[in-house]
Image (cartoon, rainbow, N blue to C red; front, top):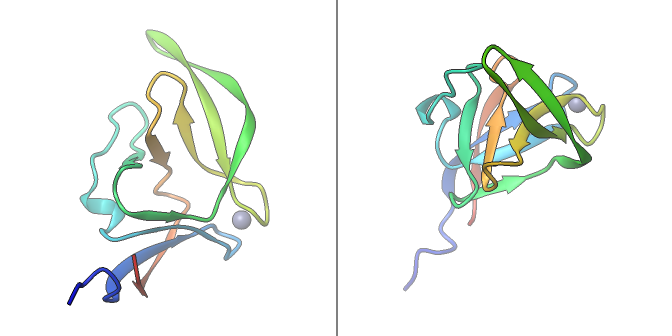
Amino acid sequence: MTDSYTPKPGYSYFCPCGQLFLTLLVPLTTLPERQLDHTFVVDESLPHIAHFLTGTRYYIIRYDGGYEQRIALLCRRCSVECAYALQTAPGYLYLNPTLFEERTVTVSV
Ligand SMILES: [Zn+2]
């Protein structure tokens, strides 16, 4: 008997417009926080279900002491940028915690 199809508690994150954006098996608040802008860092190797659209091009953000190239991760319905990824650190998502509404769900992964 394997537990790979056992439903597990999950945490779904919704755009302000109500569209599902991302589902995780751990609450966002337990993930590391990026000091620069207080986004939460999601390692894409962790189990997750993505419901967002990835932008088509990188854009440059300047901040004190440097700049970085980001690609927008967009809500499927309203195209708000709820998160971004970095060109220099592929495999991570940076989620803006001020936008999301959290709901607990049951997922099979
Ligand atoms: Zn939206």
